[in-house]
Length: 96
Image (cartoon, rainbow, N blue to C red):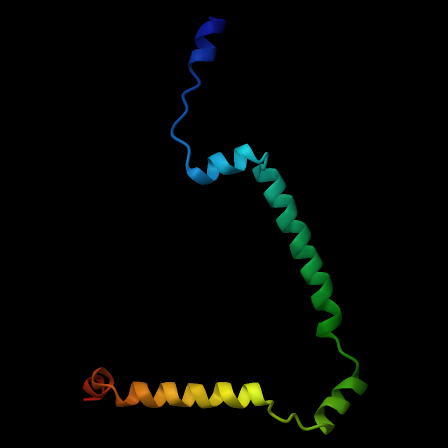
């Protein structure tokens, strides 16, 4: 009966991901613990950022943010793309 129990272990096909994880000794428990550690770290980093000092807020409000050259360029590209879409035949057909 011991032999019969050993033969009852039916195993289905393995995906490439399952095979990769097994070959690199990566378990579901390890993935879960890594995820929990990263999540806790992110929460700890977010807490100080969520409660800024009032002095810093005042300084930020006083100084006007001047757009950088990159943001100006990105804005121009977005406007060109929107104009191109609005000029397209498909867009005009949808507007009817």
